Image (cartoon, rainbow, N blue to C red; front, side, top):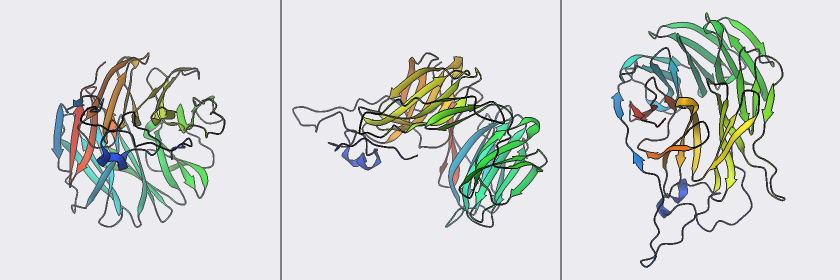
Length: 366
């Protein structure tokens, strides 16, 4: 979602490193002056944190296709991570999946060829396997389910549908949210690949939350149970803030959501906690960072990972307890990539390095 900016003329771009200015959001204003010999300016950045695990993984894909960056990383079964991305020399000719165990070893890998360009990917894991769906430029979406050993146990091809996200369902089924033309569309696929529903109504079972400026909570099919808008009224003459962009439902039932809010440094991270009843509790702005991922931490805490703008571009990690008290803040030695909490409670990413995958795990406070 594109950030909406207030009208002002920036003095300089955020940070103290002119060479990194092009990486900084246009809305951000610097809080430092031009350094001089008599008045040097430091960059008040968090300490850099090294990974406790950093392992290169050979994806061992048949035909050795040219891999593109990892787009999704999900937990599957009791210990597996599944990294999903696309491959192709000149365009995304298909999707790949690589399962990795708790010892950072490849368990299985697979490719999903496409007859046309892959335009979007979605993946979700459950206790017994992984669903992967790829939208294709010819208007179809192909969905496959792999078990914990990497065997493909179901496949479905849905015409006139572009997948955007997946939600696990009872009995190893999956609910797909996407579009049909310009309209929202929803498709349910059973564990054997048969179609359960396909139309303009979402018939998915179980709770889900949609973050699109506001946080909207559903407990199953039908209308929303509640909607929370954390943005407030904008100042006269200014556009409304971007608001919430990503949200998850924690094991406690609380909704943890992140987005963007306008602050003294431009569009900064907005972090919000909402109870299962729709009552907003914690709401805070985090300057110099744009969070891309929100994760559940230990003891009902919150972990965010995203882009750092502390004087030069980087990757940012912050951990908060249930009350919003900061437990940890760091710059990470890792490129932007998907993130999950692994079986050992570490924040973990899998990124592409040339044609290998690199798993990096970082310790977090609790």
